[in-house]
Image (cartoon, rainbow, N blue to C red):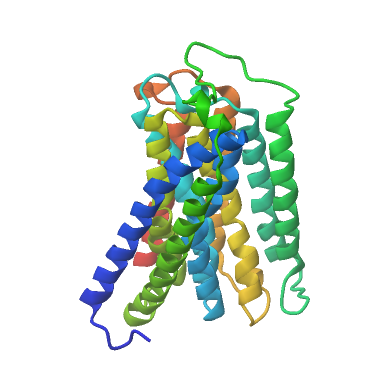
Amino acid sequence: MIEGIPTIWLTVALAVAALVVLGASLRLTALADVIADRTGFGEAVVGAIALGAATSLSGMVVSVTAALGGDAALAFSNGVGGIAVQTLFLAIADLTYRRANLEHAAAEPASLFQATLLLLLLSIPLLAHLIPDITVLGVNPASILLALVYVWGMRVAARVRAEPMWTAVSTDATRLDEPEDEEEAGKSARGAITAFLALMCVLAMAGWVISVIASGFITRFGLSASIVGALMTAVITSLPELVTTLAAVRRGALQLAVGGIIGGNTFDVLFLTASDIGYRQGSLYHAIGPGDLFWLATGLAMTSVLLLGLILRERNGPARIGTESIALIVLYCLAVGLAATQLAL
């Protein structure tokens, strides 16, 4: 499809697609905040479900397109690589919020539940890889289990927020989830939801463009699909999470920022379900290699660190950010360094 297109024009198209993703995501954050206020669902839940799914849509299109083309490594690493880099974005957001550690100020039981759910979801692909190759109509049962656990988790997350069995201790640095405008609660959310859905379509189209170009680069330059998936497509399609997180922190919607990242990561695990369905050569989990599992393990480690930070709620750490944020930055940099070393070898 793109064999005859010069590399310079492919690079330009990739940059344009990235800018489209960025522009759409800026508007998505504002709409998500309005929807949270008007529906009464709250920032953590709307961030986890609506904003998390919307900003992850371009990444899902990349993974599914790669799977349909038979590239299991790109499909898998794009999903799990996105989880790692998006968790890093919370550390970057923590650097911009100077009043206190972001995880301290955004205390929310729903975010704790989401992070724990994410660890459970990430363990399922690892188990699927280790057990015998079993498929039903070409789909591994683990993919169905991922979808079922995700749906169950979203329902329970909403209940955790509505009827929490415990609450976080409030301090003078805690930012509560309250509507900026009390009148928003009485307004219809239909218009905001319609605009939100339209922007999701834009992100999906941008994701398709990114996937086609990435596959072309892999073939043209003989690159590792795992590296391209984890460090190119995953980073580009994760830009909405970076933009929406920083924008949410600037607006003071801290629960939306944290919930959007964790919820987006949770939704990203469903890339594997969709990709396994699209991958017709057998089980996706048995077509991947050590490089793909490396990024899965990185996502598990970084999510664990984040969860520890959310529970500990350190008010101020080194450089006025949480110790967990420093650990997340170090973990990701080490992962990239190891991946680069593997590529050099």
